[in-house]
Image (cartoon, rainbow, N blue to C red; front, top):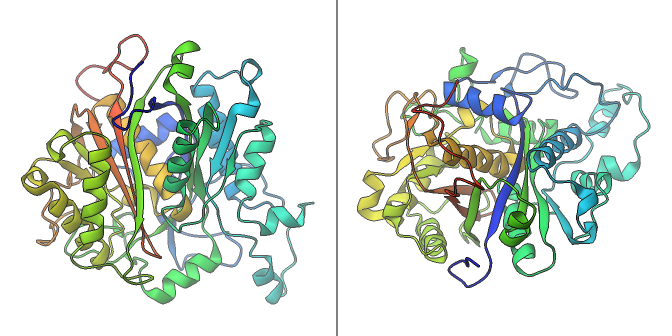
Length: 419
C-alpha cells in the first residue's frame, strides 16, 4: 500500500461539490472561472444591506429561504453534489465511520431587521439554527445520518481549509474512513459593515473590475457567496469501492502569525516557514510545485506579504511557479474561501489548466510572481499549493498531488479545457 511521507496511508479526494456566483454546480463554476467570468455586481435584496450601495458576488438560489441562514442550503447543495460525484452509496458504508467537517459561519442578523422595525421573514426555524455557528455542519451531518466525528472550526477566512485539514487528520488517525469536508459563506450585513469600516472593500464604477489582486492599483476585495464540499477517503477505502480519484492530499499544515489581529508581518517569515514545512511534509521541493492558488485578497498589505512569503520559501523556483487568485471571479466567501478555492485547485490539477487572475493590468513590483494575468493557460502540473491567510493570524497551507492512474483517476482531455 502506498504511504505518505510520514508513513500513513494517503487521504484522497473522490468527490467535489461546488456552488458560487458564476454557477450552480461544480463544472459550470469551473468553466466560468477558466473563461475569466466574474459574478461581481451591485448588491440588492439582501436584508440589512442597502440596495446598490455595495459590491458583491451573490447567488440566486431560486427558492425561498423562509428564515433560514443562506449558508445552510449552500452547504447542503455542495455536499449533495460531492456525494453524487463520488458515486458514494451511504447505504453500503458504515455511517458511524463517516465524518463531517463543515466550517463555522455567522449567525442570524434578525436583530438588525427588528431594530429597524422590519418583521422577521415567514418560516419556522429553530433558535439553534439561527444562532449556532456550527449549524451548517450539524445540518449536513444529520441530513445524511453521519455518525463519525463532527468537526467545526471558526478561523475567519481560513475556516474551511482548516476543516479539510481536520477531516484529513481524523481519517489518518483512524477516527473515520471517509468524511464530508469543506464550508461555505453568504454575504452577511455584520461582516459587510465591519469590512466597510476597515476600508478593505473595493469600489469601482465597473463592478467586475473592482477586485484586482497583485495589481498596483488594487483597492480591496468584494464579498462573495458560495460553498465547496469534498468527499475525502482513505486510499484503500476509495480503491476498494472503485472510486475515481481527483488528487491525493499530500500535506496540510497550519500555524499562527503572532503579529496583529488584522495586520501581517511584512517580512512574511511565518508564511515562508509554513510553506517550507508543508512541502517538507509532502516530500516535495519548491521546484516540484507547478501551481499556487493564492489567498489574493487584493488588499495592499496582504498581496505583498503573500508574494514575499512565497518568494522567500521558493527561492529561485518562485520565478517559474504559476500563481493565480480567483476572488475577482468568485468574490471573497470568507468562511468558505479556503474550500471554494481548493476546489478550483483540484479541478486545475484534473484538467491541467491554470485559471486566470482577472483585472491584473500592472503587476505591483513588490509582488514579483507569474500571476497568470487575465487569461488562463494550459499547465500540466503535478503538485499544487493552496494558501489561506486569515484575520487573527491564521495561516493554512495544503498541497494536492494529481492522481495519474488511468484506471482510477482522470485523464487529460485534449489540449485545452472545454469551455
